[in-house]
Length: 343
Image (cartoon, rainbow, N blue to C red; front, side, top):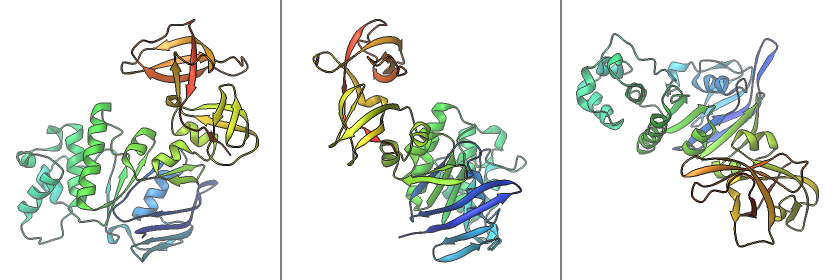
């Protein structure tokens, strides 16, 4: 079942092709993250969904209603879509309660009760209703912005990098809180972000844009483990890329004989995530490598290894911060799980 459908969306600004034939489906009650480098077209796509921009070509439909067909469509204020921006866009001269109630329809009954309910929904104490935005922390301001957007009872919520201005620890807690609020309310969400970790942890579906085109869409696990190409692999996280000869479900590479996913044969490039490569002490028959650098990171540390094939760059792996090797050590390596063969 589909709530939002984007069909061959294209948009050009002068000589710049911002989007080219982007098609994407979003299910009801789901969370989709749109990611990509700067200039990939993700913000343009969000503005087209919101109704702030219209495509040159293509169709936007929501819950069976046509919102846009080419440059003709339903204006933003009639789409029933909420949006939370990076800065929250709160009115500094209004109280928290007045900011939240700003989006209510005229003459709404039980205004104070609705504001109190929305504050509770976004996990803010009711005593904050009388405060002004400058008296709130960044995370609290974002919760008020979310409450205001929820006050319009939208069928879909658009999140335009709403956590990027927050500190790292607060960003993670806010991301979890917003996901919880939207899930409890049964509201479909689309998050635009340049933060890969944020996208993978927030969404049920991740869509990767590059140069205005949709490169790949699917579950976070599928995209992380089976990216379509090397650019997507590196964009979604650290990756170990190795030339290999693949055949019969295995790859022969600098790490020895490694299982692969799928049925491939011939020369190929394979990908492993760093956490798949483990340092072991009881497997001398496995590949050996020389430790060239160790970066202690607490629970998880990074070890740089020189493989026997000196033409390859050092391999970075992640390992426990306990019993770390030191530069110059010779260690044995084992691979967990299959490698992915890149297109």
